[in-house]
Length: 153
Length: 398
Image (cartoon, rainbow over the protein chains, first blue to last red):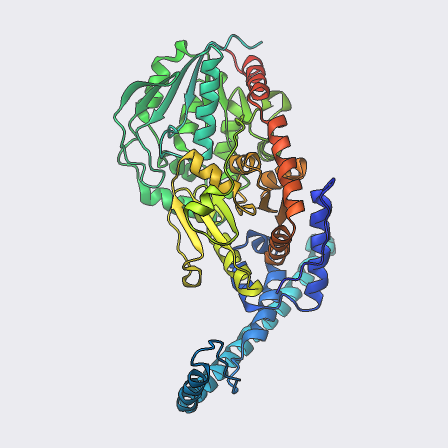
């Protein structure tokens, strides 16, 4: 959730400075994990900026996926905000949840298992190909620094 | 030395009238109107198409008078190979290099009008200058080849894969000159196609100031909550899906009650969780659009494909600040130069900036005031008329 700490007065606004301040705020909040949120990863799918910096985006996307991968299947406190018949509605909800729990628990357990396996698979693919690309880049750099023709001569 | 520019022919694939909207079309129409008002004879050559998706010939061919302009409508060529066009267009979009013959095939199967080009050939002697645009159409390309020494291109260029095609680079180099909408657009064209400074002019378009009731739109539509607005074509290239995604994330993460108002043409898919929070009023009158702008917290422009940004200039005239995508060089440049808006590169920056605008009325007022003063100063018609006259006098020969 956004908590904007900036206080900007009305006089002599300089948008370059405002945007720079915003970026500082975003960086600070990013370090605190404020944006590790699957909803942001979804919203960023179509941002051109990510296409230009896809390496950073994949890291960010995986981070969000790690946070979102396991569905919370534990019990939760049932609340009812409506004052009229609030108590009765709350009891009704508890009964419904009690009836559904045995079924949804099994369902979500399976879902969590699948999510976890998929996450592991995506991470291992990322790791495997990341290493392979890094090795190829090192090899390419070495070849550029010392081309085969130079070595032969 | 350029000759007199008494009789001008404007060439544009669509003529901006009624629901036929589009920034480039509007810009060319307005420049033509101003040239006619300044005493030049102006012929506007366009096609019978109104819809930029289907390009069907909907208008009757022939010449009619529209205000001070003599407008001639020519049929769009039938039987173009749309499949080939889309295949090549897709390849370009994905950054695949095309051979020379494929690029030509792409342009041949784009929107063309043989009748319009034939008219230019047979009436070549009548026209002192031909002003053609925007750049991304077969019609503009082929029309510019007929009398290149008289042709001035109004490209409305964006930094997109199409702009990098070598055949289009040749078009930029063969014409007598280019009239750009903004300095970043000119710099992009020079960077991509190496056009000499002497053949470049930055003209743009003037805007008439207006006053709009800031409460009328929200009252009429019973919005009951602050809103952000976007006006224009709704399509992926204009960033509409990104705006919807960001807006949905903003509402979900901040829990703030905020609406999104959209005006303009084009279909888009509304995510289910935004039902009831997005008001799409479609194509509306100028007054309705201005009122929608005037009542908004900000005008949000998520497009990175702009050469000018008419709508953000209009939003400043409506005393509303702008929030634009930072990858859109022109819009960012307009905001930076005017102090009239903020720009974001990603969702977190969007969230912080939108929250700041929602919470800080004084900042909104300051941005809007600076933006309005900028438009009145830089885009008054008198200034634009002078720039266009200079360009017509300096570029091309009769």
